[in-house]
Figure 1 (tube, rainbow, N blue to C red):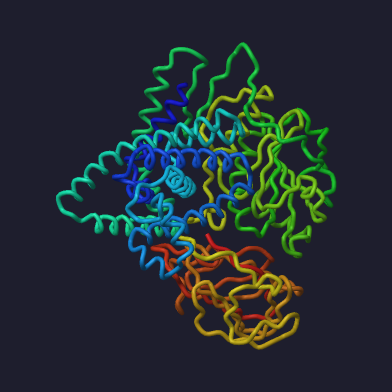
Figure 2 (tube, rainbow, N blue to C red; figure 1 turned 135 degrees about the horizontal axis):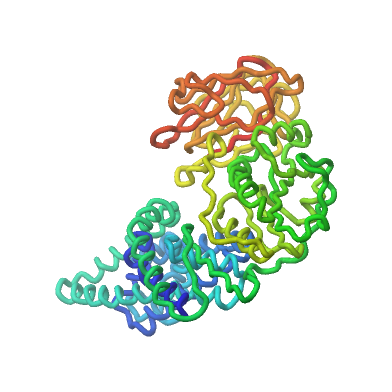
Length: 591
């Protein structure tokens, strides 16, 4: 009951948060309509949809995330039509009559603007709003979502998320009742009902634009956290202080709830059992350890980390995996890195061995060149983490970088369950540098781009790509997120190889960091290069693998950080000129 109260109050506090602003126009567009047929169904639809989507996102894996993406696109389209219908049904009908007819039917029972809405139409708008609502993850929502991920799909998970959404719906309902009276008074005294309707339509379209551009989870999220975090933490502290019965609880420094162990009985984690741990057999070689088997690892908590050494997402995860291996090695955690190659050069064991040394990885690494361990886990991602408990059961997984606190909390839970003396502690904060540093997500406007013809996109040279044959290429200034070659190159399925010195690659990008996977080619001879940004030496914007004048050398096949913008992030023209032949270029990534 206490957790439900916390969740409800956390939702109610969202009315104070700038993060709620994008969905306010959708709600206030129902102002002045009958509460039971308009406001209430909409808020119910919003709360129920958020609870369902948040539950699936926390425990359902990647399929739920992809499904939600499609749902958000449909909701954006629906609410955009709703906004256009508010502005001018006549103009909207000229643009697309069938779709707008549907939008107008949502406005009223008869399809005519100004009529009373039906409960069904309001419910549909509420569902669309629930799909788009991304509340800021302050201390209370962070607690709820962490508990959802750790406990899996169950009634308590959904009830907590529903309570949070109900709190938000309650505060929105209060605001709507007040706003409805204000709007009604304006209509009576000023006679501007049509202008109010058009203003609401404009606000709805603005809300759609804010959500579509990601500002609700970017700038507004940062403002919201700053404005509501102290209130939410005060609620947590007060309610926990008032608890008089039951096992005591505490909120750790990472914002997650940790139940104090009951001395009279063994600790049992709420992490769900996902199935028996697949076999670790099939690696072509092991580094830092003899081959390990599931039987040898029984009684230990095992973190299996799928990675590949040129993957930027994996590189940014390495500092955390390395820190966990060191922090918990004496408490029963075994970390195993499973290196599954993406490119052919990553199958070379000497390349992997060098990368393991460069990254200072001391835990065992299984080289899975034949993808036998990958297939046994039915894995599809770099990076991917799987946690195996002391009984040999998979209890947790994380796909992609991020969620580090949640993953470390799961490690602590399973170590305590295995009998370890695991008290709540703060999570690791690695001092990551260079390419290992976390991405500047809010400013990334460029996506991973491959240079081999099998996956090449947005090629901007005047000449078309010629597969597996030398060709002279030329490029002027490309548009945003386009790239081009200059000089004589042979483009293969995975990489582009420079045949003669003084060839280059141009890319117009928008991100803090620019990385490029490069190798010295079959000869192994170092290849010198120079980077320019907007035609000038990078200066303070140089990456970890270049100097201020833009010079660097390709000595091994790996990811090179070539640009890190030190000031305000903006779109820039990147150019790299190779002073020697033979370089192989594979893929751009950004951070």
